[in-house]
Image 1 (cartoon, helix red, strand yellow):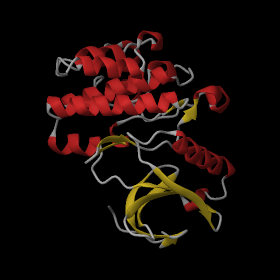
Image 2 (tube, one colour):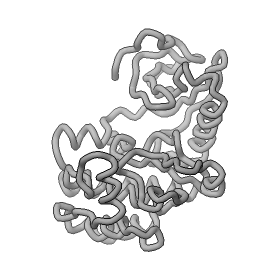
Image 3 (cartoon, one colour):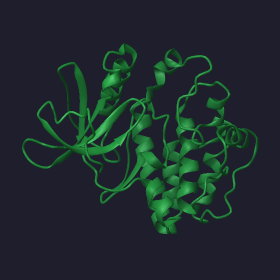
Image 4 (cartoon, one colour):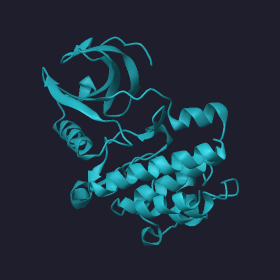
Length: 268
């Protein structure tokens, strides 16, 4: 947690803000104190976006999508509201580092822990896809390793499968470089299979400490994702078949999230 900065509110709604848990392009996540005791996470748009109708609409969608999810592998929603024109979303606080932080600090996860992350994130994707959503930004920074197991967070650019085409702008690829599936890099609509591709990249990263398509500038990484096979030599044998299948170039060749889950359970 980082301390509050100049310009941060001290109270939003009925919640006392204690510090910053994270910040992104659209909003800030604060650690807050629940009025009845205990800690929660509170997300709200950056103050500069409060008058942006488009970003306010996206935030409202994030709230609605978060409420549609079964919270066994995500942060449970506690409430949402508006405080003097500032919308906010309050969720369960999940103490624990992001997968990206753990791997960067200590290296690859042991095989059993990597398998647990693979299982937990696959289960989360089953819940996301069964709710009719596509996450669109699955990456190690959006997976928390909590005491309750891995949890997928940040549905800021998630979309309803049935309305994705209406939200996609020509030439615009939403998501983080290196974690975007080939069909999206070439202008296609995000699909549940696109999240599965990101899962394959994430699990390979967790198990080896390296991105399966290497590093470098975004354009170099994009070319490798489009045209080169993934590097899976260091992925444990129990995970490699599922990861390889998830990283198929064609979305139709990838298993669904439920298929991944079955394959991982069978490999135990």
